[in-house]
Length: 471
Image 1 (cartoon, rainbow, N blue to C red):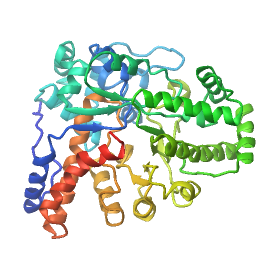
Image 2: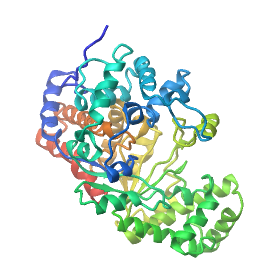
Image 3: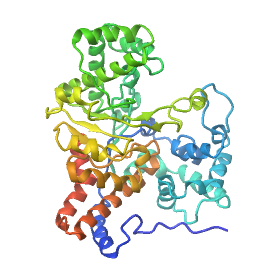
Image 4: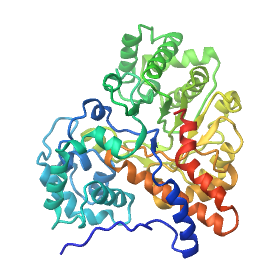
């Protein structure tokens, strides 16, 4: 038996009538503001080629680790969802079968952010008015598949329809940025920028690290087996990314550890990690030194620096060997910031030329470490609740834990950090609703005047992110 799909206009707003009334007024003022998406992992080739998306499964299921990690947790083979194997082994290739398997298990997503995002896409983007289930799977597939073949659902058309002002992708420093070149040369007015993600040439534990240094040498003509040549090669690639529109770097280190070694110590360390497999201690020390080096380069060239630590990446060895990176097996870990960041902050924490945006997967540090750090150091700003905490309750906990110490203006608004292009407006809408609910509570508790709440709501939605990321 099919059930209706309805998006309640008051979803996520406070249940208390007085508070909800204030939240409604705040939300009405900011709900239609343009989307600034300063950090994410959408594919720039979508916007370069502007080709039609292939089919519902390839767009909404196979590339989305939020989706297949849940199904995998219930015993479903990732091959059955069409996730490509690293060895080229057989996987399901019939998109309708993949879609049916997803639909039959859609109940697993009840109460999760993924359910909210998908329902928004189905209702708002494709106009579906019945819930996804085994009974409606083929109806969904047919409606979505037919829509994807039309001009209105090409990537650039959706970009404009979504009112996206800026969208940033994330690329390896070895990337030639061919797709960004094509976008820039196309005459299209949409702003799709790149961000510099140097992990493949900064992290000795990254697979192929030493081979990556060789590629870096080929691209720049520098001697990347010498410390000076290596650093200059990194500067060269940063300059290339800036030329292509980048305003930020991004660092996915396992911890927030930083170091500030002498030149002789740094050079000796580089020689060890660049010529032989690194010990765990040397790998961590080198990553820490390179975060400080990256901060120094950001002071020179103005790129905003983002740090996303605290993920034990590729925790499931079987999945990593069979499917590769970013397949839903990354697990949050405890993360220290106060001691870990001190060497970097001793050099640059009071330098207004640096903006370092901190993220965490360890919510226990919000009030104890991150808010006090950002509430003191001019160089630090707090990124929004991230990844596992990109959720209504995660957003609420973030505001409750950091606002009293860091305020609103030491945060940078919202970014969606997504690979799922169609869900970008849904994710931003969740953040806008949750922020309006939080501000409304401050108003009804007489901790903030409503005119101030309107100003803060706009800042959290639009102004802070543009300023922080220099957009």
